[in-house]
Image (tube, rainbow, N blue to C red; front, side, top):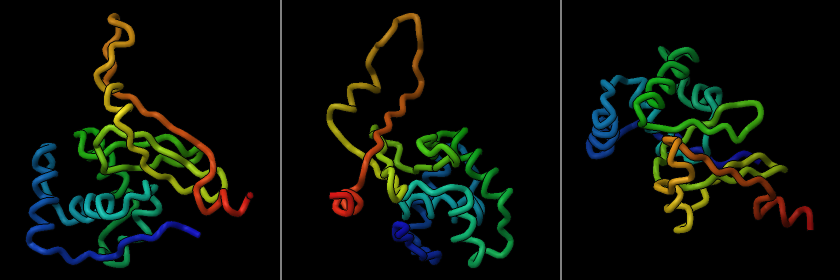
Length: 153
């Protein structure tokens, strides 16, 4: 069973201001498509693929194309507004949560979840090799989520 998706494309002035501010902080000019895609990522922490985002938004935004979704995600990632996650062997996933955290993927149902730990925070500034300048670190765990673990046991 896929994870729940929040399907609300009407914005309060506060929500719209928050999304526009995040785009502005990352030097991205707001547009209907950029606002909708970033909002989708913020409201649906399921680490969606391009196809998942497109399939959820194109009914509400008829001018949206899959190419626009790709290009918008590329722009958001290049400017540091979102991150891409390569935990899935077949698809790139996207995450709007920029805090230090790891990711978990269930081997059975495929859900991807954020994992938070105070122990991960030190990794961001840790010097592994003074000869290198590390700009990014992604930690992935794979196993079985609570629901699938119950089915297996």
